[in-house]
Image (cartoon, rainbow, N blue to C red; front, side, top):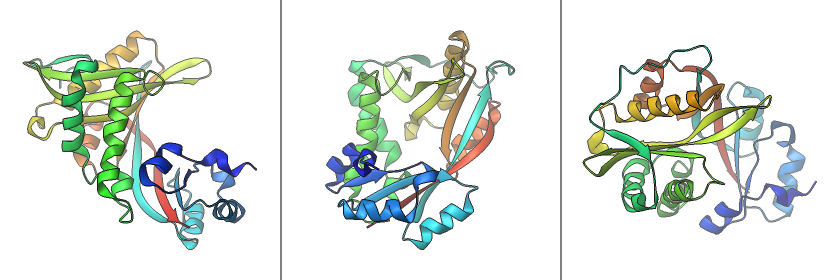
Length: 245
C-alpha cells in the first residue's frame, strides 16, 4: 500500500504537519495507522458512517476523538415538488463572480469562526482553521475543478449569503451536492438561505439532476430546520474523528 496517497497536501501545508485523510472504512485498520506513523504522518482525519459504532469505538481505542457529526439531507427532484413559499422576493439570487471576493470572504469570517471539526480540535491554530473556510469559499468561486455552481444572495448591491454545489454521478446521471453555504449574521431570519436552496433546486431540476444533497452539522439547528421545511429528508449521518500520532 502506498500510504502517501492519503496525504492531504492542503492541510499539511496549512497546519505545518504531515496530514492524512482516510474515509475508506475498509482500510481504517491498525496496520494502516502503524504505516502512517512510520511514514511520519502526525495528524489523521477520518469521516465514517455514524451507525458504524464498532469502527468508531475501535478508532477511539486508538486515540481518535469525535470532532463533529453531520446529517445528509436529500431532495428527490424526480418525485418532489419544489416549494417557493419561503422565497424572499426582495433579494436577487445570481451567479457569483470575482467581484464578490471581498464580500464573500467577510461572510465566511463572520459565519465560520469556531465552526466544524477543525475548530473542534484544540491542537490546531484557530487562525489556520479560519483559512480553511476562506480558501474553500474563494477556490469554489474561481476554480471549476473545486465547484460547479456558485450562487450568491444580493440586496441593493450587498451580498447576504452564498451557496455552492458540486456535480456527482450515479448510474450515468447527475445529482448535485452542496459544498458550503453561509448567511451573514445580520441577514438571518429573512429566508436568505431558504431562497438560495430553492434557487439551487430550480437550477438542478432544469439541469435534469436526479436529486440534491446537503451536509449539515447535527447541532446547526437553524439550517437543519431549513432543509426540513423545504421538503428534504435526512437519510444518513457521518462522524468526523481526528487523531494525533
